[in-house]
Image (tube, rainbow, N blue to C red; front, top):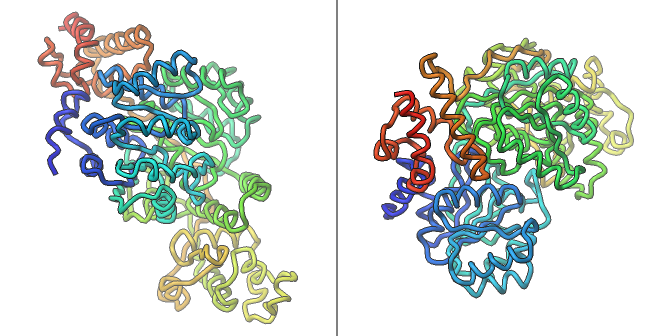
Length: 599
């Protein structure tokens, strides 16, 4: 595979020396005309995987994106790089849409961003089919899977793209997808013998911490005191809580903006743009906010409530630290979160089997909250990735929780699963252990089991915690083909025999957050401080002048290298990481003038 042209484009246009991770394999697959499924963590550089082949293959690339704001930001960034790109969505006037369609028809566009609902219209498909299409990239591809954490009905119809563009390589991209979701993406999008690229899910720069909710606002404000003058996201479960929390933070002198699906679209757009383009803004949001947010310097994500699943948690916390700098993910939760999420699930229109899967996902997240070993290891193991036993960058590693010996209780639970035939879920097993008198127990004669009533000394909540930790540690598994029935494996048999001990978490105590995370400008000496601030001010002014977010001019890491190396001319500035040819032409002289003042 010859990637010389792709590497040259990376260096000349984007200003980066080498490809990261599996970018080269993904780009090579598209250049060869092969379908691919690309899993890369948030901030891993997924967009380059389709942007570079889109510029090297003949025709226009179609980029399917679910969010209007993401389209606009990506197109703005591409135009700054000198790349011909456009988008089609409802924010454009009729005249603007006609201009875009003319440019496409004349072959002037290298990339066209479009939402799935517009793409799937017969008129749109017929129109696009008249011109050569170089590549079709489907971003946030997990939305096509009903087993995924963010299913979207509009994505289901994307399988017909293969019928309309049979010879066009299709690239599906996502940051989170377990094996079941990956298989469904391949099936529903009708990917032909796709190359599957799964990068590590690890985000080593993010510190994970979890606490039981005690005084939510007090916990939040104490956390934010560690993140003064930093941008971040606070997630809440309800719209009402979003608005009251944002209002309360504003009363404490912070810049906090609410964001949820119930707000007027113009208000949501205004708040999102302020978050992207201003420094030190906090967004308080429901999960309606965040997919595809491309702001690199989000320093923290704080969950006021429990998310729906580990996948959702990973996706939401992944919006922090896209620039690779130290960031923090902190969550507080309580039993009422579980009750509320289960209530929402029961009221949904999902099938019974899908509801069972969602309950398992919620239980897996609860199990992760209660683990007694490294959180990063638990998170990566969930995604079937090996990990070190100690990361040194999560609350469990820094401040190990209290544990208690619970081997006998674990054996009681596993024995009940075995004696009832490995056919039932957690709730029924607990009913047997606690000696409950239910129709289901009488129907199956489970009051006759030797384990019936032997667990009455523990509460239902305590048994649920043990069950979650048994599942999280791999001593049990859920069989989704049988509606979440619990099953045993070799590990559970070893525990039953007494070959190994089982310890469970006594409580999830609140831990102190670490000192303020190291910002991008960490280590700036007093003699360099003025230059650093001047470079940031220059970037801010250019961003306002060109109607861009500051990071679209240059990332903090690029400014840091300018400050350290103090280039004196365009030639030396071109060697700074992230300074491509187009940005050098547009912005180079302004930064060189600032540097000259301090040299």
